[in-house]
Length: 337
Image (cartoon, rainbow, N blue to C red; front, side, top):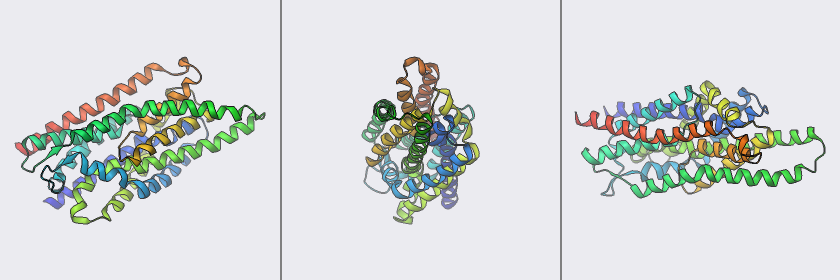
């Protein structure tokens, strides 16, 4: 029975990886497509390549801290998730369904917040009534929540500064064609960089709970196998269902041209990559939207569609609380009735 539940947990984890690809493809390539630099098919091909690279090279940096640092054993033993993989099934399905619905409506919610929210809700239920000693590490949570608050503002700040600095040499180029060609190349570079950090941070977060389940029995190489597994899931999600949110990010917040797209993506990638080095699961959705906002503010406040931004921000908040509440309730019902 435990092996069957573990297989279900792996399937649910693939589902959340698929959701990351379907919702977060826009984070890497939405601005490029919105600026008409690249078409959708080529965008998702580049996404797949660089997500796999990021996951394989740096996915462990987030996978281990999240998998082992949020739901812990107060006695210092193995993670409670290793003996309760059904909690991973519950958490990943809740997070996945929420993101699927948001993707259908074209809202770039944070998959990180859905995953962390669901794990925390399940963890609280386990700590209150479960037979396995369980503790939710509130200090770790506060650090993660603080990073979530900082992320969009950091990306917006970086985007604003990068735009100002980049515009200085650009003004010296007389040919508009040359300028557009230059930034077309740069926007593809920055989009690939975002895809890389998606592999490092997003895939690491998505695979974290499954890592806690299999670490003790499958050994150190399990992290690399999970990273590749998650990266493939993300690539499949981007190919099959990523177009709708890509349109929202690329066209729904502010009108983009290649230079705007470049600085937004570069700012987002730098922000997420920095947090990845600290093992913090931050949202590429928050970061890229913050980057687009910062680039749009260079043109003035009126260039940014405030109502669209408010809707996206509200969905981020609702995502965490909803996933937490539903996971808490389902974990309680499944284990104690």
